[in-house]
Length: 520
Figure 1 (tube, helix red, strand yellow):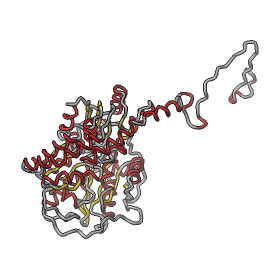
Figure 2 (cartoon, rainbow, N blue to C red):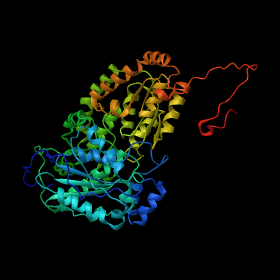
Figure 3 (cartoon, helix red, strand yellow):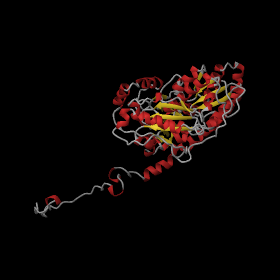
Figure 4 (tube, rainbow, N blue to C red):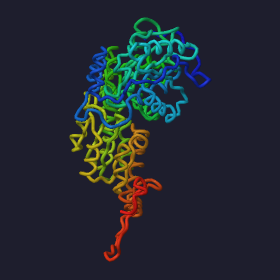
C-alpha cells in the first residue's frame, strides 16, 4: 500500500449548528411504503435496479426463513456511518422511516446529525428527488469537515429507481457513497453493516490502486497485519493482537472502521479474519485485493487452536511458530474455563452474527446447549463453527425465525434462555431466567481467557436467579391477562355472577336515539 503524507485534518468534526443543509423542503406525499414485498421488488425491477437485489440475494442468501423479525436493516448501515469520524449521513425515504431511524443516533450516543432529503409523489415520479439529493450533497461537501458523505436510499426511493450511482464520485475531495438498503431486499441490519463497509472498501481499494493514499493515524506496523471483520467488544481486538504476537503478526483495523484512512490499512493486511462470517461484500473486496480470508475466531481452546493454525498457515508462518503460539495461550484459556464452569441447559438465539462463537464458548464451558438460532445466513466462513457445534449435538438454525426460537424454548425447557426481546419476554413470563443477547452477551469480551471468565460469570449469575423468577411469577400470577388486561380506566370489568328474580316486572327505558318513544 502506497501511503501519501499524513492527513492533518481535525480528528472529528460536524456542523456545530446541529443541522445538515439538505435540499429545499419538499412535502411528503403519496409515495407509499405499504405495498407488499413482491410489489416492491417488482417496482424495483421495473425501475431498472434489479441488479442490486440480485447481488444482495447472492451475498445474503435467504432461507429457511426469508426475513427474520428484527429492526429495519438500515439501522445497521446508519450505525456504521454514525460511528465514523468526519463522515456525514443522509437518508432518503419516507418521513416515518427516517424519524424512526434517527433513534440510532440517540441510542448509540453518536451525537451526529442525520440528514434527510424529503420527497412527495411529484418529486419522486419526475426525478426531482434525485436532483434534491444531488443538491444536498453539494451543500454538504465541505472538505474541512468531511472525508465522506453516505447517502442511503430506503424502501420507496429504491423501488422507484432513484439512481444514486449517478451522484458525483467526489465533490471538492469529499467522497460520495450511495447505497440502497431496502427492507424488502436486505434481510437483517447486520448485513446492512456489510453493505456500507463493502462499498467503502471498494471505493478505498480503487483509490489505493490509483496512487498514494492517506497514511493511518497510528504508525504503520513493521509486521504483517490481520484485518478483523465484524463489530466486536472493544477489548477483543486487543486480545487478538496479543494472540498474534507469537506468530509475528499484529491485529489490523476492525471493519467497519472508525475513520476513512483505516480502510487503506485494513486492505494492506496479509490476512483478513472473518470474525463475523456474513460480511460477504467486504470479503469480496479483500479477495479482489488478493488477501486470503479465514473464518471463525479465537474462542475457547478448540476455537483458539484452530484459528491460530488457520491464520498462521494463511500468512505462511512456520508450523513450529504456530505450535509455540498455541502452547503459549491455550493453558491459560483451559484454566479460565475450568475455573468458571457453566452447569445448566441453555438455548441461544440472536441477530448480531456472533451467535455461533458464543455457542462454542458455552459448550466448552460445560453448558448443555441444545439450540442456536441466528438471523444471519449460512456461509462457507461459518462452516467451521457450524460443523464443530453439530458434532457436539447442537441444533444450528440459520435465518432463524422468532417462531423457531420460541419452539426451541418450548421443546428444550432450558435453565436459561438467551435471545431477542420477545424470546426473553416469553421465558421470563414462564419463570425462566433469560438474557438479551445484544446488550448482555455480545457486548462483552469473547476472545482469550478474558472471554471465558466474563461469559461464565454472567451466565451463572442468571441461572442462579431462578428462585427470584419463581417468586415474581407467583406474585404476579394472572396480572395482565383476561379481565386484568388493559390500561387504566379501560381495564375490562371482572365477570360477576348475577342472580335474577323472576317475580319482579322489568321496564326497559328507551335509548337516547329513541327518546320520546316511551317505555318499551
